[in-house]
Image (tube, rainbow, N blue to C red; front, side):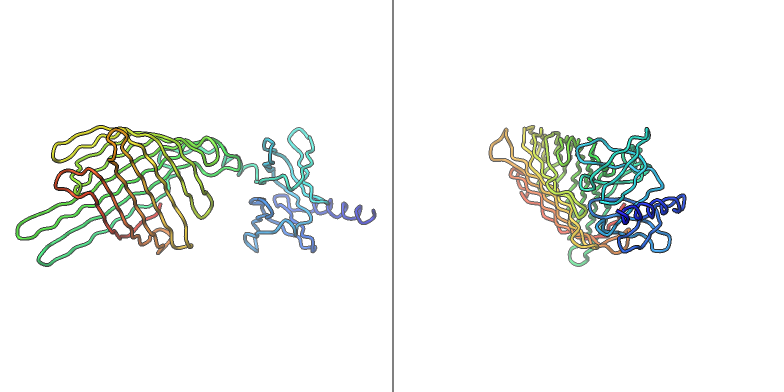
Length: 355
């Protein structure tokens, strides 16, 4: 009993003696740390200190916490709580809200604790149309001189826009934009042969639950080797983020599309097609990332026809902004124009800029 009373007195003194604008963390070994709380998530506490930098501390080592700033606490099965917070004897959080109500919360029920200002900035996030974009822009060029003179340019844009991750999921939009260009020209004996490929798509996702989304897609393709002067695709469906963590995301999706295909020989057809696809983005090491997309379009109107597109790239980081990028593109069409190839295969390399 005496020991408990003494501990309470010590904790009270610490609270009064704390610097007005500093949070205080007392460890079980008696060490005291002053700083600014960054986050408490799971079994760890992150504290920004002036002399030691950012510290990650296991909560099992923490005896007492006193916060000089208002915090927001996200508790499983409850609305977020905001107020003044302390962690006392027994590992129970005590939060006093703005009307003076005291909430005693078991630490095991807490998802995350953030400074209230930081929490509000995440949840009440507003951005202009040009903000919150991430992705890469890649460009490559190759030259061959001999009996045949060949010039090839390859370029791509892979961009994504999504609101920052919030402690509590809120339905929101996600935009995926992709553009791939291959321009090749070969000259031999006064004969010039060009082979150009352009593939562009915009997919708009609406995430209505963690990992679950519906989408709409618009795509345009031109593939010279297949005799395809233009393919227009409109459609939509549903998908799921099978894996979503700090290292990467794997999304699976399926839906229905209306497709209009126009060929250089004059053929033109509009059909209904299924779309089944996946998109993978995985950080293999701190410097190496793999991006992979694959989309299959079985034709419902003309049985037996389909087209299949896949793109795999490996990105090797050179600096914080630039990297070396190499990729494989494979476009397959079962019904190309007469005299054209069904398969268009390309190996690309170049320098990528990250934004």
